[in-house]
Structure formats: C-alpha cells, structure tokens
Length: 182
Image (cartoon, rainbow, N blue to C red; front, side, top):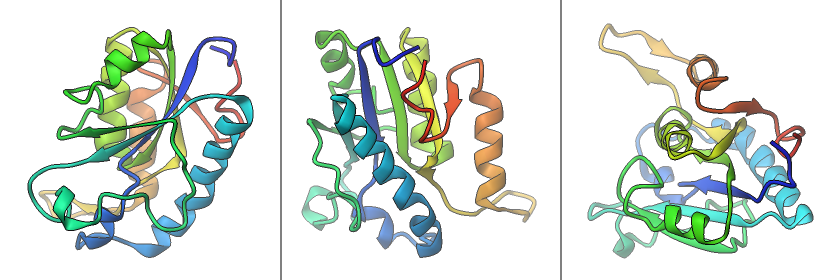
C-alpha cells in the first residue's frame, strides 16, 4: 500500500453527539484530538481526499434536529465529501462505497469514533469489499466499557484488542506518522 494507490482518509463519527452520551470522557478526547488533526493535516498536505461520516438516526443526540451532527469542537476537518450513516459500518446505506468506487479509490485510512465499534466495523467491511485498509488506532477515540461480568476495560486494552483482531487480517495497523507509508 502506498499513497500512489488512490487513497481516502475516512473520519467516522467525530461528532458533537458523543459529548451528550453518559460515557463521554473529555480526557480521552484530548488525547485523541491532536492525532486526528495531524492525520487530517497529513491527508490535506498529500492531496488525499478527506471523507467525513456522521452517524444520524432518529434519536437525540444523533438526530439531525438535535443540532449535534457537527464536527467535534477542536477539530478542523473541512472534508472533501460528507456522508450520513445509520449503521455501524460507514459502508452500509450511506453511498460511501459508490463514491469510493466512482473515484477509483482502492485504499482507505480509517480513523474516528469509536475504536471498537464503528471504526472496527467499517474496517472489516471495507476489507471484505476488497479495499486495502490502514487503521490508525491513535486517531480513534473510545471510552472505558464494563462487560457483563462487571470488569471495566480501559481504553488502552480496548484499543489493543481491536489492533489484535484487525492486524494482518483486515488492515495494516499504523500510526499517524506511518499512515501514508507503503
């Protein structure tokens, strides 16, 4: 994979809606924000199209009427194109797949919110559709989760588990610094 391969940066669900969820952790966002911005800046500098995906459904804070379907404060994305999705995968019912194919894009770089949910699901789906996928974990955001046994998983473990199941099967795991490398 190289930047010579037609590539797009996909930013999933980096939207204000999440600030209105009970699990929002500002410190997690502040750790994610610079990495996401650096990835956007890297894409823009290389002429790589930036695709912004917003999760939209009928319930606040994810409804269009809620006013929270907008980029998270502190990020300057200025996307080349925007899509709305109502499922975990950004490739289901959004038109993203049609757009990527029409532009001849064969490689996608995945980032955004939530690491183990919409970002991971989109990664698996893109791989199954034949795209070369680069997953930039440090430019994904998630929050601690508690399992059915009562164990709370820190974000570092959630991210490590996501990397474990994606790497070499569905994606190449990269850092912001190596995301555009071959």
